[in-house]
Length: 348
Image (cartoon, rainbow, N blue to C red; front, side, top):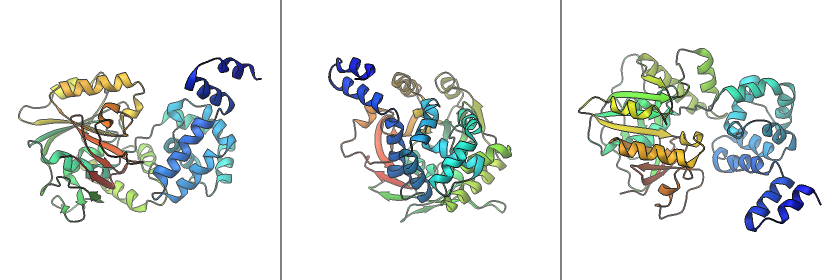
């Protein structure tokens, strides 16, 4: 018997079985992660990424490459975006193998130095109903703001099926139209929120005037999503004309001071989407939640349900696979599509 396995046999219960499996299958966890990405996220959104992610999940060579990176850098979005950055989207899994073999060092450098700051402006589709019932005007603070595109929900147009919202159209810019399929009875407002002060916070803010950073941002849009790319580019044009202040800082140490700088007479709102997964310790996430709730700001969270288990436990129905959980001040109100494409409202 393998000495590592022999040692684990003496351990008790589930821990013994789990650790034995990890020794026998060192790639199992990463493989499962890519298979889940293919089935729960890429399916129906990007046929090419679904196919490639499934191929990665079944390739010992590609999984072995991923094990040479820190866990935080093993995520599917980052790997596929880095490959695309270097050689474009591979046509098949064989081509993906060739790219990795020829560019291992460069690929590692890209994955270690860049992050998936997707900054999907269509997520504003689920933010607008959450802002609807708040006392106007608002001061909007986005944590993990990237380039700040989600700080402008009042500058975009929305199609919720029965109801459409749009800002005044200027002579130079046409707002992107975000279509959001809704179920339940979300509080879709009759007018866009009134936001008179906006700030972002990010460890590495993205500059809309930096061509290299813009190429990376556009490369995070998945293959086959031409409309999504077009909407992203339209949002960039709008925000570039009057860019917000995105402060370089850490959400755990710099957010409170930013909240206290909100001008009097405005309702402060702290918003984040697909950001807290980068804070690995649950205790740190919980400390963040406690700080925001104690600050007097309205807290709107749009994250995977596992990020705040205490909020997820309040949901009475089934978890909706592949969706984020939207909550207001710690109370869950809806399941949302990761790119703002759906809103399944169950809140009051």
